[in-house]
Length: 340
Image 1 (cartoon, rainbow, N blue to C red):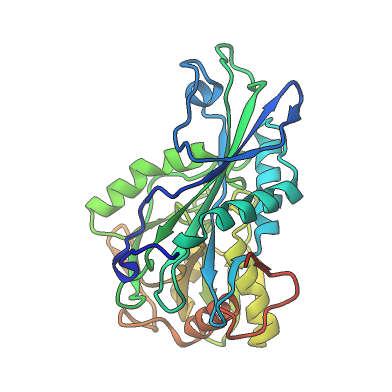
Image 2: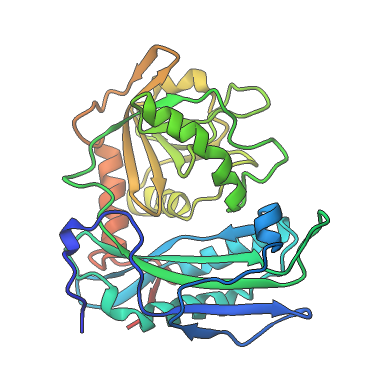
């Protein structure tokens, strides 16, 4: 039985659901994993995650398509990205096929929390892993826990996607040879002060420039940039310290294969941003957040697409990708995993 939840008034917050998946790594191997009703994690006071932030995570969504199927979008890419994150933080890789299976099992166990089609709400899925045994010397943990929980979340944009105003940040998001390219909790901890500061100043997000030269566009605290040129090209920044967004990679494919746009993944210099026609931030939560204005220490860059609605090309990209996710448009092979 679907839960009696006011789907249209859900925010982007945590609601505890019935089951979550847990697997433990000990003596060099992962156990079989179980679904449990216990939402609490019990750890030793000296657990590696609490002392040295050894934790990684992923984020994706399950939703109901137009024809009533419950599906997840490209979980294999999340599995692969988490494997990369684990290697970088000296954590054991949770096998990619088991990752996808754990996601499917957790969604299925909480199927009554998947919002109905047309509500704008989705079931957010959070797989994560952390060092669980006591570690006092600075070294990797020897034991780990992998978990998946789900929570229903409302539409990211209430009342449509209005363009946002962002600022060029004085802070750095990631070091040139650091951990910007993986989904480690520590990256997000470092961005908190910058985002709180931006919000206090009236901005929705930060634009981070590259830490080495501060001349190139990287990303925001939680999303990749996409730009549309005045002659209709799709441009996205290329850098070793940007998180490889699954939404961005999907949009690149959609731009090229579905909309016939020229796609450029390259270094984007901040100097050229003023010449683009449209700008957006892309990620799991919102798919695309349109950007209407960027403020660089008092200087304003206003995009021709304006502050009222998404630019025309961004809108086509958004409609096509969400159409694929919702089953209105045929998906490329392997993009949609049907749960039920």
